[in-house]
Length: 384
Image 1 (cartoon, helix red, strand yellow):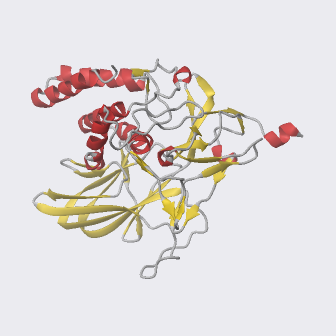
Image 2: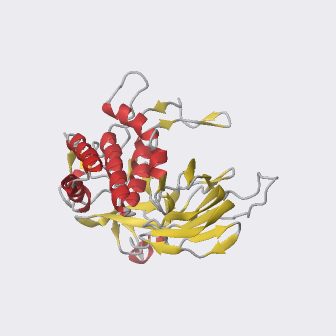
Image 3: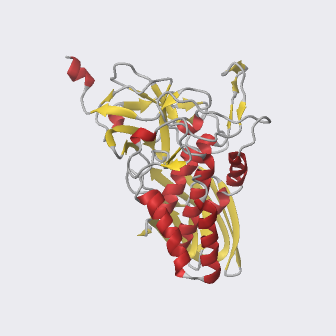
């Protein structure tokens, strides 16, 4: 069983933290090196198939209906969290982020919905957890049922939902770090002074449905994330650090109380040091579409919007035509706005048959395909 090494690894983590003996830490670091760095991963961030590790950099023959067991996703995130606490290397939180959005969010829970009294699904229902996350072409998620199923992954699903705050906020002798951009609130003491930070998604929906506040009206979906941190403190001086993700299209922009500010870049994080009292910090993270190739089949790729994996809906593994290093050339936003909310959907353009993409985390019962072969040709030119 692939989960068998986890109890041993976590025991050695605890042994290192209690005794300080480097041999325990070395075992954990070597385990990560073999399981992740030398193995490569699917675009989800996972590395497994059928409760076993995929061969190093040979994932193409291991896409199936049994990829990415939920328990493994959760326990590898736990391992990455410990390694970040020991080393401060932001690469561990890039890994955590990818596995949150394309693992925990994608296979942890799903609920059908209604819209204006009309059923989007014939019978809206609820999926409790996916034991596996299928990655083969024309896959469907196999959701657990409310009463009839009770797998090990039901247990780690409960654990994961109780752990998000542990993976967002960190504090050390220099200050406070935000490593995951999830709405949350933290309260702490800094040198005997109270500090409170609330993180929210900034309003990017425009001001159509808002009266009491002024918001810029956007006529198209923004190509960035914008997070708002409200910091209140009793004249406390400390560093505020924020992770600069691997998927940034260009430099992050920071404002404090509406004014642009400079920040230091250190170990993959932005750093601002000042005396904090009552401030609004806004973090703007320009994102981009990225192609994630299979290591042993580089012309077969998946697409991510920032860290969020996109899946083709109701389609087979068809060949796409375009520049895979510039996915924007053949993927364009689709149904980009619903009421005041921007959506994350895309559709292909200039293909023999066009179809839609949506975040894998938003897929419930639909059939989907994640990886597509891409030919570096312009279909319109080829046909002429």
